[in-house]
Image (tube, rainbow, N blue to C red; front, side):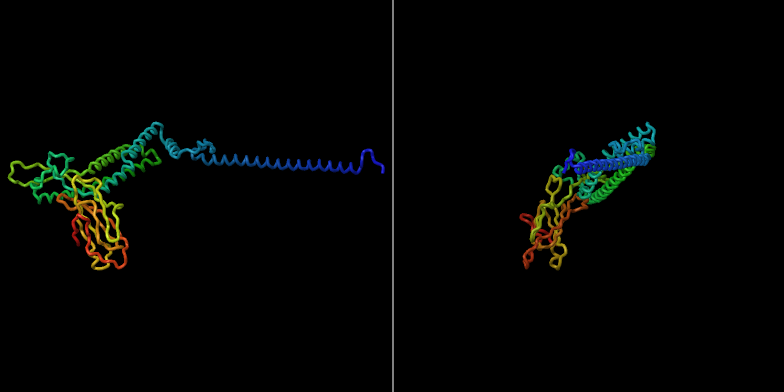
Length: 390
């Protein structure tokens, strides 16, 4: 076989065919890539056009809110609500009127945050609840004795001996009525303060500044009235003097009748110590306290009663115990039963009003089955006196 100087003609044709196929494939891929790129650019242009139209629609919608001059993608677009409202209100007034409105608004806000703040009203409500639980007494004082020196040791014992007992009992009724009226007036004044603050709060939150500005004279009068109510409330928080229409000291033929005055005084309520008062199987340990300890020891009256007695004998599980301290243990109770205990100050000659007494309910722990019945009720701890039973 004769070989061509240019090699195998069939082999050369195959190589040429492969080269042509490769060039054609590359050309075909390039055209496909160009078509995909064209489609991608076309979609990008449509998305950009749609975004512009959407932004125009959003700008059109917020025009009515006064926000059309702001960019929605800017942090300044998220303004404080109060600033936006003030900006809208300012458009309703002239600049000078707007400055006056803001000055009056600041005066009202300062009054509500200082003189009539919610925290202050809450404290007054707490004090009012405390006064409803206090004990009220008549203090008999010589006119030369200061109110801060209300020590029974300072007052001579002969003072009560000179006072007509019947007239003093009548003055105790007057003191009771005055105390009740004073508590009712305090509650009414506190209600006026609550109502006044609610009114001023609503006025401060009013969306239209024009009525607020036009009626500022009435607002100033309202502020003055509420300040006067607050002054009266604070003054009545302290019990005052009892007015005596008749002489309490009868004509005893003495050369000089002593001049006396009557004052109402308060004592803090007696309350159980609920952490220290505990019940055991057949006895309970009770503790109580007074917020402000008196200068002299006090006498208390402790009551106990079995709740839901089941037999006639169990109905005798009650009693009244005079106590001279702030602790007492009640023994010989029924196991696994519920008792109610109350404590208050003992009756005294000068007491005029004591509407409240503290109560505590305790349940004794279960005991062994078939245990002995209690022989005696209300057994005091030594050296306290024995109770009087009912």
